[in-house]
Length: 317
Image (cartoon, rainbow, N blue to C red; front, side):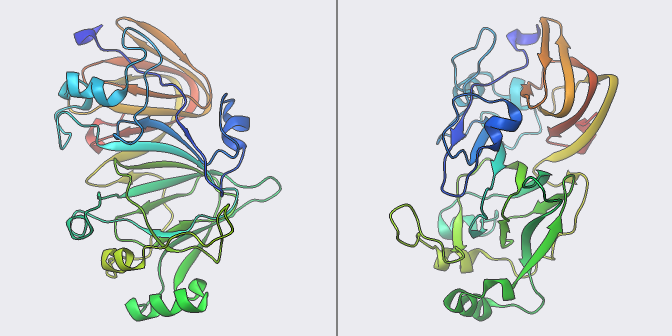
């Protein structure tokens, strides 16, 4: 075991919201999920709800405190801050569509005192019996701030936002400043900057459990929107300044060694795998997330589709 570090598994870290469903428990065989379960924060060191390590000598410790202790040995030398984990990785079950949202980027975050949030979505599936879901991302050509406010007042927000027909396997890059919403029935794997800032621009006329409309953040949203951003296109993998996401069809063995530059966040999206390192091995059944520290060289083996996230495309197997 290198530097007393090893690949981390985590306890369940689940969230509930009125738009959530039951698929995270059903599909990924998770226990003790709330009902409905809207999100599983798979790997997170954000102070609002850090993941808790479930295996090895650090079991019971939260990831935030462990990274403050071990620093670059976990996050790697390419991390923006040596004592903070820069990403938050989630599963999202949208039984009904999410609100239309926009997140700050590095430029606008100081204006609203929020945290910058660029993210990507990989569509894992849709409602049973359907072959596609709606992904709302980007504004229609020529839309400006006045158009946005008019669409909110009239309840015709679909007139200004682009709707994409998405199937399982489609991936969308959602930079900070882009207006977006996850559609009804979408099951999503999300990689994002470590941020808990969301500005709700429009909520489709929905009311909360108390029968009242949920709070909107129109002022913050309008000041955060980047109208220069292009409408995103479907893609397979994502490489951006904040993370690199890649799908790997595993058949046999691959070495995971970033030479201390970056952690490796791994999710088994299909099949099963095994991770082996100097100190032992861990079986990785379908639906498992694991974090491999930057200074932990490991071998991944099996037959599986895996999602691998690092801080640089040079670090990805």
